[in-house]
Image 1 (tube, rainbow, N blue to C red):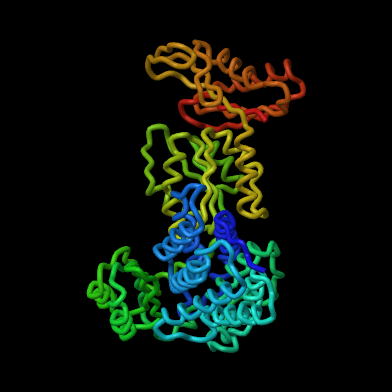
Image 2 (image 1 turned 90 degrees about the vertical axis):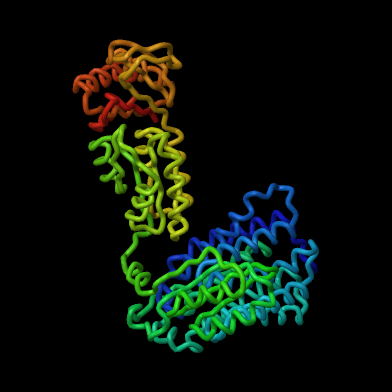
Length: 529
């Protein structure tokens, strides 16, 4: 029975792959001992597939399957990271380019695409080594061909290929001494298995059963596994005529190892490990136009990887020492700022890295910081950090989000819960006008008290306590169960006490919590839940 391959199903598959690689990234990184123990194979595979999805964003829902596949595989090629990412990009390109030419796909066509992918991957590698992702790809192709011989439906061919790949992965330590010494399966092969398992789920609706050998931990330290190989990884994209590539392969193969050159139609991705970086780049110049040149010194990378990273962290921007202390008590990394302090994207990128986690949830807690943190998150993602920016625009929204943060949940579920808590927190503030102006509540003079509700000016007055009362009254709608008051650096201690009495007199069912936030310029932040 043929398989109907539609554009929406392909989009679903791309998302499944990213989700699966995200979940397995840390595990695959830990397996990474060959060819260099730089603990980045899972991250590179994940970032490669993220690049593919990013390439689809400009395409609307009307885009057809062939267009989606071309843009996606080109995105994989351009965004491929590391040896594993480059080979994965070639495998996906070879599997789907032919299958995308027709919506009705036969079992034989699926098997043929797997064999073509395996052959293309072997051809792309300068010196193929068994016990690696290449071996797993070849096993998947053989499994697909065997499935056709016994007459299974097209969608089941994907399942048989994934099963054969899982079995081949388990055998990789018997084929490569480096893996046996460390007590692990091949990291690149594991990444391919994750993709094939996602493919099985996408096209059969069944999630494959996990196997016990998938989560080993290296028993040998990374520095003990380095055996005098080249010191640098060189990668670049290359615009070159196809007939220039054989000579390029020969030249680069003489300079180092782990050579992979993939692509076609004048666009190529080049990966090689060398000692002479300049010679590797000059080889690209001789063949065409190299660009996006990236050079990694393995010794530096391995040293960075030895720094232990936590699974997840929360970064919160705060405006006062009391607020900062509250956030730290809740486990957040705090970026403190003043109203006048300029804060750029570079500092925010540093904060995301300093959190020391593979996953980071960001609480900007200020409307002018949301866009800056989004830009910083884009840069951090290029370094393999998974970042979600929850667009909190008020300090009290951040506190509400932190209150429900649960690192035991998976990343997406945690972000959804925190986002929901922030969104359901109605908030207000009281501040003092610094100069005359026009507000949504009318004109104000310097020194007037301004009441803010949900980010908009709602009250203008001369008495701070009266305006604070107006803000609280506006927020205390039926159903509110808790009022949070955060006092500022210049707030009279009696202000919070008076507000608490006022609320208790009117609404005995509402609990009131008071914190000393210490923020400047805002005598009061308030929130209701």
